[in-house]
Every structure is written in structure tokens, then in C-alpha cells.
Image (cartoon, rainbow, N blue to C red; front, side, top):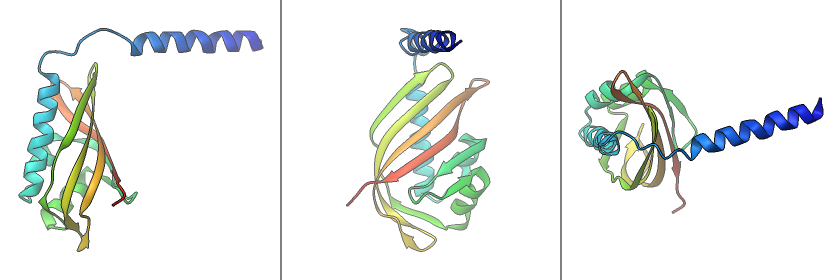
Length: 150
């Protein structure tokens, strides 16, 4: 019985590693389309405009902020509309897009100047955004930020 469990585990690992090393290329323009959405959302946030987030955040969106707080789509949009989140400037640096079928993972850093609920949130942050292509439309399903030491 123990050997069977070990064999099943090895077989599963081999299958998964083969899948992860697939040479299949994402459709042309996928990385550019995802980065266009990233830039569009950032530009809208800088203007205090929630429309891009309303359009691109999935209904099941989960945001984990650099301070560990977790928000859903409605909460994230409410913070933009109310002015609780105010960014005077932000960058989208060192962006990399990895595409896995209908999923894309974007990692980047930002150098931000702004406030959230009156508290200074300026500094450098590393971000991970997860996109899913649902019915031909890319949507962000999860975001996570980690503040870098000053």
C-alpha cells in the first residue's frame, strides 16, 4: 500500500512537471493585452476614476494589501470612488507577464506617492496580479502587494 502511494505521488509529479514545461505559446498579443489593462487601470486610479476597475476586476476579485488587509471588488471600487485611496504618482516597473492557458500572472514593482484613509502609503511595492481570460475577456481575479523596506 505504501509503495502504491509513493508511486502515485511520483507519477503525479512527473505529469505536473511535464505540463509546466509545455512549449505551447500563448496567443499573439496576450502579454501586450494584459499590460494594456494594467496601464489603463493605473492611469484611471491616478485620476481617481473607478471605471477601469469596474470593467476589469472580476466579480470574485480578492485584493491583499501590503498591510495584510483583504478586500473584495466592491470594497476596492468604493475606496476609489470615495477618495479614500489617493495616488498622486505611481509607476509600473520591471513588469513581467507569464501566460498559462487562460491565466496570466503579472509581477511588477511600483514607486508610489499617495494616501489611503489619510495615511501615507508612499514607497516601493512589489505586486502580483492574476488574470483569467473568461469568454475572451481578461479580468483580474487576485492582486497582492508587499511593501519593500525603505
